[in-house]
Image 1 (cartoon, each protein chain N blue to C red):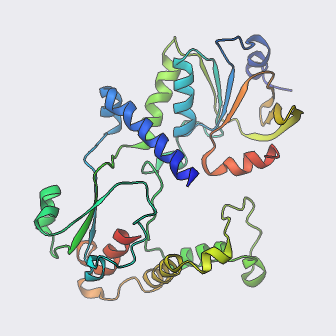
Image 2 (image 1 turned 90 degrees about the vertical axis):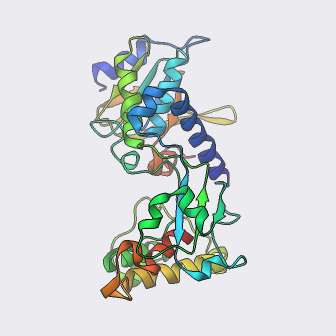
Length: 172
Length: 152
């Protein structure tokens, strides 16, 4: 649940950025209209039926039926088979994650006020750590392009699915 | 030996009280956003990314969060996923050791979870027998596929 809570926090933060920055919203195709998951199975309309998304998700939602579905998504009327119910996640937003990343990277690279140095084609291959009080401190980062002496810099691992691998290198 | 660029970063920009040096490993959406936010606050940032451009792995296909879905996959993918979930699968089915151990499963909790068992059964059924009604099956009119997407 901690991971889900962090994801919830991070996504809310990204949404806030796009809500307050119209250029960023435009570049990423930001759409705050919610999401609709259609169901065509009578089984799902039973109130007590097992639905894994109930209770296990932080995404608020409500169940829609009949005309309420077409009010949210009029194109449903054109479908060959009409849905029996729908789960409407009304706070859900959509945007292109790739374009969001590219836009912020462009800003970092082109805005002279932002001091960000990008080292592409640089793969972390190893990490040296030392015990500093009760915490382990990263002292060197070995990459395919050389060794970085970390000194007093703060190291943030943002390697997505590879994070456990990097953390393992650091004996964390 | 480090490249000149890496070396110069390490030795020319010591942290000060209000400007903390930051090294970010990973140039996906999280890494780039963190770099941007830190830089806006005045902190110098170095970002290390193994690819030649930002956001080209998971961030190029993520939908902005974690989704539990039940995609219909082909038979080979179903076998690969199932093998990855089974402990010691390489001894039973062959193949090499999965190097990064992405799946950390508590087998007691997992196998006693009716929702996981239901998901597994439906995932197997839809992947191995994806078209129960092949003649009339379209994306918008195939109950089994749409229901799966909607419920898990």
